[in-house]
Length: 271
Image 1 (cartoon, rainbow, N blue to C red):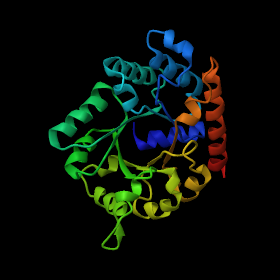
Image 2: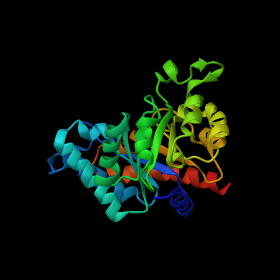
Image 3: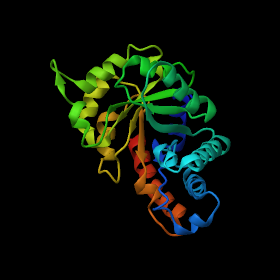
Image 4: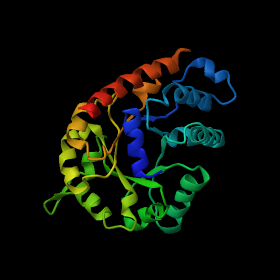
């Protein structure tokens, strides 16, 4: 999927909402545990209930890898279901991979070719030869960690080195990598005040923004400083939507929460 196609979907659906499919078997409705594949049945119900309100789904692979081969099979069934039923939806493998050379190439092959995700998240700590193998895939996107929403982000990312914060150096450097036009960036919603500075460096790049909802990030603040000419934002919400209810009506309640965010986004887009 191209960024132009993604932007078209945003305007069509009046939404730039991404739902994180982070399935914890301890949190899903108990009746699903009796099914053959509880993880996939949960995801399928969420997707069926929300697909018209979102432009992206983002499974965090840790929540699948934790259950071994069965979890990986659930992930495969989930991405296949999205691609078959809703090919217009942008898919993100939240895997945060980061290694060099052939290893990165194999990670990229796994997510882009085997599973056919549109994008994957990566960690840039090892530099360009850990990221460029992902960037080599046409019409696929690499979403690089830039400024995250966790407490430990202040350990390194905001360090002032020679008069410049490290996250700015990372973003600026990445612009010079081969096929950097395929880059997107992770910027946490709890760091809304930083968006102005980030937009000075990458004015039109898409930003994946976790932290709205359960983590306390403000949608209006993120949009105030982060919106670009092509919208340029994917706002992720996971727990606040998918775990809105643990009862049999969980999918209906998830839709209600997604609709609240979509309607807020619609107002922002129309204004």
